[in-house]
Length: 114
Length: 114
Image 1 (spheres, rainbow over the protein chains, first blue to last red):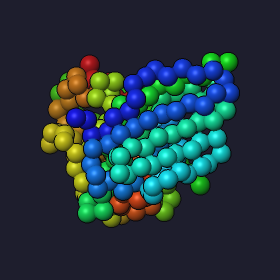
Image 2 (cartoon, rainbow over the protein chains, first blue to last red):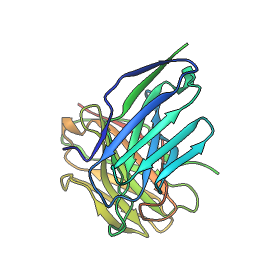
Image 3 (cartoon, rainbow over the protein chains, first blue to last red):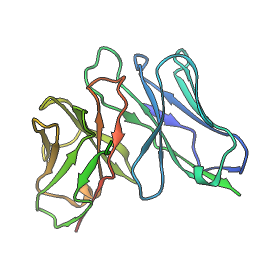
């Protein structure tokens, strides 16, 4: 079982639709969760972080965390062609682990069609 | 505030050679992590430095090493290069060590080993 798994892509949505990206993780003590966006040929860009169960909204982005189910998701409302990129789910260590090591999923490629 | 900078941006080396990559974190950030990104393995953690000390190390051979200076700048070194070391090497900085601190990536160094 992979430590961090993302829903297999590629994912294609029409412009203006909601894009839903999902991620599950295996380490129950994980405490921090991040979503990065990576455009082709570029480095990952942090778009959302979430640490507590529930929803966190930032503009068109909403991150959802359910620690009991070991599940984190990212919703992108009113998707735009500029949102077309690979989205990476990253999980940080549990409290007992020192350091900032992030474990990444393989990424989900999103295409927003005009 | 300036972002994370990495030099050089592109590098071509021959098998058996060694290479040194440099990373300057965001001003005020004291933790620097290094990651390797390849199409087959995705983003994998190499190591993390905080206050000139290695806090965490990923599952990479001893040919991969790093260090951090008193101004938080970091370097990583790869000795006896192999073809499989061809990858995008990413540096990420965060304010402090620990899973709850957000990490911001630099543009990366694209290493090609021939």
